[in-house]
Image (tube, rainbow, N blue to C red; front, side):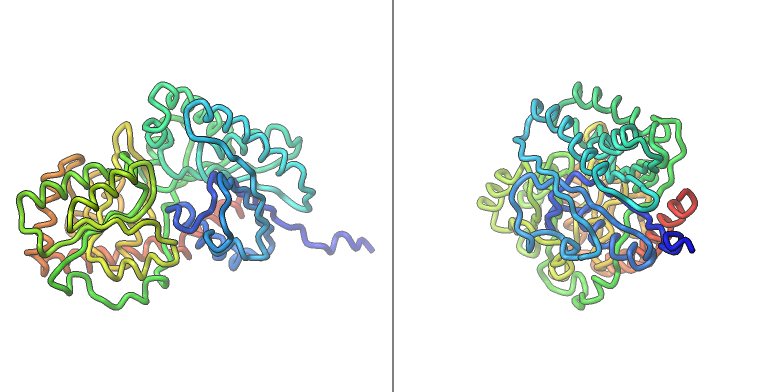
Amino acid sequence: MDLQAKVPRKYNLHIIIFSSLESHAGGRETWLNNFIPKLLSKKEDINIYIYFFPQKKVRTDEMISIIQNQKIKFIPIKLFLPKGKFFTFIRVIYFWIVTVAIISIKHNGSNTIMGIGSFYEGISVYLTKFLSGKRNLSIIWIRGIWKKESSSRIGCTLSQLFERIEIKILKKSDVLISNGEDTKKYYEYKTGKDITSIPNSINQDNFLCIKRTAFSRKKIIISYIGRLTKVKGLECFLNSIEYFNRNFEKNNINFEIVGDGDLIDTVKLFSESNKNIFYIGKIPNQKIPSYLENIDAGVCLTYSGEEGGGGVSNGFLELIAAKRLVIAWDSEIFRQVLDFEQAFFVKENDYIALAEVYMKCIKEKNMIHDKIESAYKSIEKYSFNTHTDNFLKIINNIS
């Protein structure tokens, strides 16, 4: 009797994510924290390995909660390098370590190497597939338009060079997934390959604890939640507040800023010099629902131009699920989810129009409630159940 034949072959999924996995870090980390448990519940014959990059010492209690899950194997890749253009090149070389780590693990069953990102993670996916000497399925899950997101950090010339590397890597990948229709169109044009769009999703159950109705108090709160960077529209948000405070009655409104990033000193200076601007700091993703209960509206101001981003934003979906008003740039990034009946849309960079929307928030509460309820009806399309099923269709068809 062949006893070995009775042993079920496992499906091994290696996930590479260029992140410290801190719970306050942002959309990718929140997504991973929800996606992996749902995936494990739907596919029992799977081993999950997550390769992450702690760029500093982080306590376990500051990381996403799945770090405690014994069913998942976490492999830290130490990458203690300073920021800067020079170290960007060294960081690229460091991704060789991920390939070595993956190849060194002995596996029983089929292997899929998946990068949650198209450049740094894509390098590891490509090297592993090329050097392992085995038939490994490669997937790259595109989380935004990398050239736009990187150009503000490393400059246009370097980002164009790296984009050429990125596109070559994407062309070599077996499967490409995008996190939105805008990212799908961009990379299909660049690569000439078919891309499956699986937009970001949200666990609605996390927001059922919210009881307070938005705009139920005399003084309203409008919040910016995200990385404190130029490409996320933070400077324009601050300009809009300055304009509002100079030209409108400011006693009935407060502005809050949540997050961390390059412009933190600017934010602190603004909050110190304006009585209605408050810097809240970093909030772990599990505490976001309780924070959203206290606000009334959120701004979503990621740019769509040469220096911007792409894909369906996790923070954007969280505002909708919490039944908070969305104020966003009028671009495909946000219009792929909501329309004018469901949110306030403003032309990119028009800080005066943003300030005028804040005034509408004070004066037109009935119309605002209609927008919020209409937006909430769209959230079902972005459930993690559907999201995970769409991913399983891909790996079940090709494994």
